[in-house]
Amino acid sequence: MKNYLIINKKIKPFKKSLEIEGDKSLSIRWALIASQANGTSISKNLLRSEDVLSTLNCLKKLGIKVKLKKKICKISSTGLNSFILKKKIILNAGNSATLGRLIMGLLVHFNGNIKIVGDKSLSKRDFFRIIEPLKKFGANFVSNNGKLPIKITGTRFSRPIKYFENKGSAQCKSAVMLAALNTKGKTLIKAKKSRDHTEILFRYLKLPIKIKKQKNYDFIEISGKKIIKPFNYNVPSDISSSSFFIVLTALTKKSELKIKNVNINPSRTGILKILKRMGLRIKLKNTTIYKGERKADLIVKSKNSFRPINCPAKLNSAAIDEFLLIFLVAAKAKGVSYFRELSELNQKESPRLKWGSKILNHMGIKTVLEKDSIKIFGNPNLEIKKEIKIKNFLKDHRVFMTSVIAALAFGGRWQIYDKNSIKTSFPSFLSKIRSLGAKLS
Image (cartoon, rainbow, N blue to C red):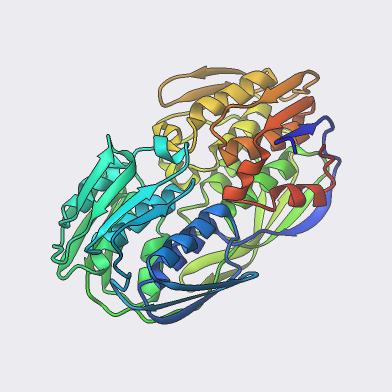
């Protein structure tokens, strides 16, 4: 079977309702923390993507009991540091940097030799940013110049640390928090604003955590060696996955979409704030708090015109996975949009800032690309008539899915490669797209 998709027709106007699978970040965090709980934890609506399945497989290799049936998952453990010691263990994180970095925090205390590997894309990404703080706990790391494969030798005598996280990386912050769970004493973290799913789970589980929020940084204190009780979790829908349909609806004339039960954690809703500044109205209904996380139904209506934006850098962290989609809206705006301080985009599965510019250029949109910024010269009347081919993007699922949205919204004949890349985060993406009436070949 050919691993590419052909789209040669714009999507017709639609008025639909959708439910999106569970949030990937929450699914992985639930599994890792459940592996440290004393008893059996149960999750519903767990995302069945390759990244989450890689997480469950890694836990199985470490001796944790995992049962997965449809969207219900059970994880049984005997508590902190309950991984079973074997002479040689190789953990494959696949494409998931969240798994690869966070599980290292749990392995700091594992007194054995473990090797972590990943796919071609993950093996190009920076792990030095997490090796450095985790070494301070007492573990030893041997890496390929800060990249995978990485060998870890844990310690029985970990010590609490002080850590300054200045990149706005929730993965780095969370890995240190997980390491602190099994470390006697107080670990202190000063962290640049980023996703706070791990902090919310710690608070929900009544773990000894103190958080002091300031304008640009959070100060976190964690006291380790607290017994974690098993917990059940119904994973809310993923706002990153929902964003593809938000933007498709926004760009498709006379269309309306309701997306149910979406996680609207403020550290993840940057795209909603940015699109609002550009003129799109998104209504939130049935807003509730579920175990510390906010969730709501989103109602989106199409918009005929958009304002350009000089995007405040303070919104970057809360929209870091959605910028490729935001760029598509900027392509339709009347005027020049400017996005800056986006170097973290090039630390993803592919250099996404470059790919965002490349997709727009293929579409006929002028951009000015610099090291960490991009200017986009919008064209409100953009209609694509030519052929466009998207390939060789390191199988980055978000590049693939963004290209699909662009093809359906702007027209042209698109040939988009590596359609299997969606399995890492959103396996049902194409079926959801078809349910809105899209014609895909």
